[in-house]
Image (tube, rainbow over all chains, first blue to last red; front, side, top):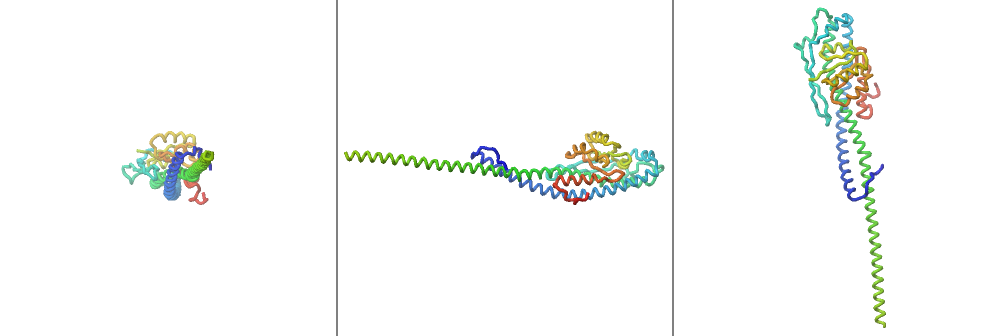
Length: 229
Length: 107
């Protein structure tokens, strides 16, 4: 692990210590977020899978009944019958906040004058198979909406989860060790300086002492000489 | 108010029209991409695309993947499921968790 390229000063040490504290706190928060997201996501993905299974199975049924309908009726009559749908769908999109991810919520309303009669044609020219196909379709359709909402939510959560996971890993395996290492380096460098200073001082003190002793000795020597003469 | 769109081959999506969805029949992926780009700018919140077209439209669909709207959802067409919708669920699990832990190897 490469340490940061910084000057080993006391000021840098304080800055880095602060950054390490922030990184550690951030890491803990991110980790919590990741775990919570993961919990929600796995549930969602499971529900998503079941819903998709269901939709695919039921859509296959619907297609089958449409197939039958188009077999007994000519293509033109079939298209003509469905040309002007009686029912419209109004979709409103709200939003909900899942762990700071803005997820759309779909709410739909069908606009039919008479909800029991959704068939946009008179019964004279069409076959009964078409009726049942359309009835099936109108039953599948709400599930498909639910699937759309779930699938979008799952995709968005997945993206957010990926981002969070990367951040957690970057903090855990790169940022925090790097900071720790740099702090240790600066601390060692400072200690080393301190020790160097100490020895230098001791050395200087010794030198001053030696000088003082010599001076004293010279002085007393001179005094002795004077008293002798 | 938002709308729901369906893109796919004519026969498959005819039924969706009956329940009030807006359908855009087309057979070619390039054509479908053009339609998708056009209607994504309008107020469509959900766009269903048949898997038969969806499989060739990865690049365009990728653009809308991380945006909030529209939600682009693959559905099987009349010839049956190609398993693409399922694999997109699987892909999002892989993206999130880093490994596929829900589907256990089966497709």
